[in-house]
Length: 146
Image (cartoon, rainbow, N blue to C red):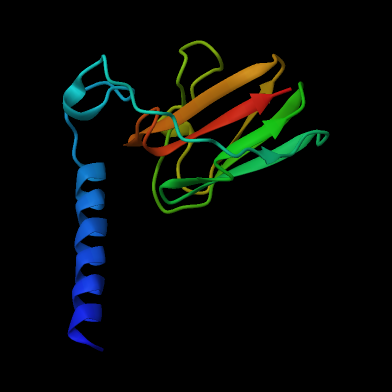
């Protein structure tokens, strides 16, 4: 490998690692705030791609270690979603908007456990595991009901 190519590879790795460090750090600002927590500077929300599962009466979402699979699902009104903890860790499922659906506490969502939630209202219902994420980072997802 030439010296120029080595420098390019090393520079790219440095830039990528700086992005990872920045993503892991917290600035104390709100999730929608920009650098430094300045609420007047908002970051653009990333485009979310929903897995279209409309028309199915039952859908399964798996908690696999610290990820939800699929993370974003689109379902029909009245769909029963079975959340299954397929990972090694205990989890919970909390609504981003309190009261939008019943929370699933840690005692009900240990490794190997499952819980059914029925979504009878049209809208978007964000959720997260407070042990492994927040409403916008880490272990979170959303159900879009159409």
